[in-house]
Image (tube, rainbow, N blue to C red; front, top):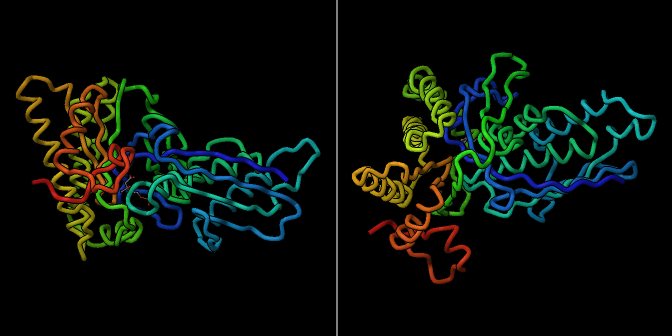
Length: 347
Ligand code: PMV
């Protein structure tokens, strides 16, 4: 028997992926850019074991036995086994690709609540499978077939997922663009507005947006090409205020195309908007004081929870403001107090 355990952190997109050109291969309509959080933050942890004695594949998610019929897990598994079957062996275990696998995966944060759980989960699964079956090379296109955004969690730091041009998805891959400490002392505050599961999953939401939103055409053809180039330049030049402006603009545009969808995909709540408004007020104050390097930015995935990027020194100022505006419910522990904010709208 061979066993491997891996962890993979979530990534938070600052230029969002929203919309596919191929649903089966999970090929996106646009490039996206994200930050992979550090290993000690929100993580998926996966243990995989393979053995010639196992009679079937099995899967547990967050301690619950789950069906392995999910086509996305099957696609990842098939691709890893295909690659393993082509590997050169030194005479030992050459049939390893045909051994059944037992998979046990856990998230240390709410699953399917718009907190990029599938990104961490599939990146972790694919990496662990690659290790246990002895597969080398770029695993980002395999992780992409589990959940698009998962391909970005295969790398640390700032990562760009190139949409690619090929029909088979061979060039739809994630590449690191800057190491984790690129913006020194960067902190991330995750405001858990609601840990419940989202109403419209990202697959369905994207499908509806692509089918019905005319604003989406503008996003893909006009806004994104120049915003992506500006974001790459801002990252290269470590231009933090521009990075913040672009991150906020892209989050708001993604949620605008979601609202322009029929029926509308409403992910942000009144509390989410109140958090965004607080951040704008803070940034306006910093701009008035001529202190633009102390700006902060927010971004929202397909859910109500805010992800706030802030320079470390500024976090000390912003966190008390958030906690004052959104006091935690009495039952929350100090750790949750720091990680999350309560669900009341700002006064
Ligand atoms: O990879 P998915 O299918 O969970 O889609 C993720 C979509 C967003 O999180 C909203 C944006 C992104 O780029 O991560």
